[in-house]
Image (cartoon, rainbow, N blue to C red; front, side, top):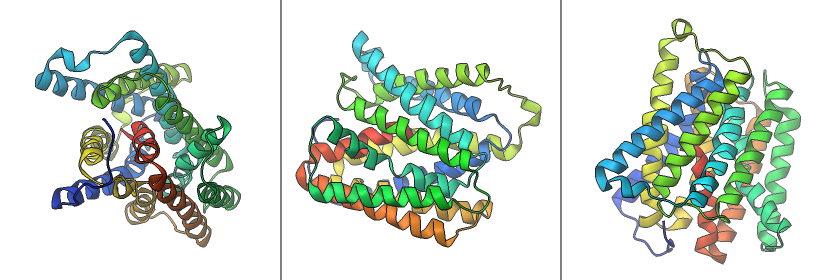
Length: 316
């Protein structure tokens, strides 16, 4: 993508694209929740990412020829590894968890990913600022509160699976900024989605998942199509454009807006209850994430991109 500066003008186009990222990525939790109502979770993810990878690759070839997908073997291998961590394990476990916990609770727990990224940086002796560490402690305190109190009808196993999914996402995001990846972000996404989707298909089949087309409801098909076309393609395209045309401090706000959108949509569409515990724990998490992002962007725009661009590779 290149280095992102912080002096981009905020135009109407920026606000439109930002609104798309806010709503579209916030709505993917709802889309996953509806899709897994009648489609096995691993296989639903496999269909989503393999089809999205094919469509994105076809678009790239039509625009720039096969050279637009050119990459070295190490770059392909690294992108494939990140795809497995982000999509096969991260997204796959999220889909499994959403069978037993609300979409809003899942979104709030996943919001902890930027916090884990800072923890990993600390482990490799990349010392963050004290205010960043304070944000991590605040945010993880909110995660602990949500995990202990849960929500109405939430299963302990579902919460644990989401936390493991978040950890896998964070590991994949952390690695993607420190290993050789394809220079073209869209080519990277093609590899991640293709390999991640294939991994989901293999894992799902190995766990006994079978797709009974006759048992799939119309709303699940609609949700799956939405995840492919809107969640994966339009959402990621808008985000990629924003990285080059908007201040990173503004782009990074997706990290604490998406969960709020997910909670609201879950309540409106699926009648999910919003308990006092969810509101309180969610606010604590979002305050921690806001502290981390605001502090990191003042330190270095490139590191703010690490918190934004790398994490969202797993949201395509």
